[in-house]
Length: 79
Image (tube, rainbow, N blue to C red; front, side, top):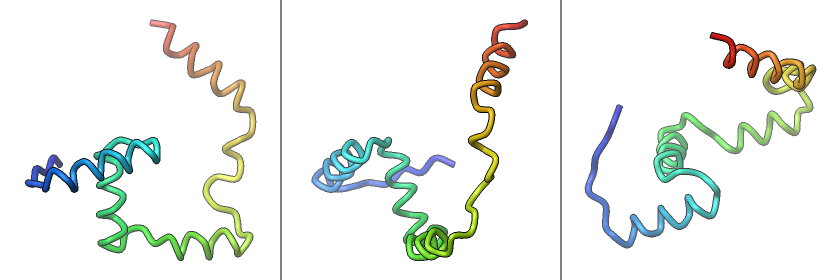
């Protein structure tokens, strides 16, 4: 969903500067801020997960990456 809201030019410049510093788009930066403000992302909970030592995400994601990448490239090249 696209959302258009008026933003003060100074705030807009700060958003652009911070997004560039973090290496992300302005849209991703603003989305991240909104998700945190609305409780969808909680950095403290993520820190607790990391400190617990429990696996996060797919534990097999980094296995056989070369073969997976080659297969993906091959699939894109074949009509």
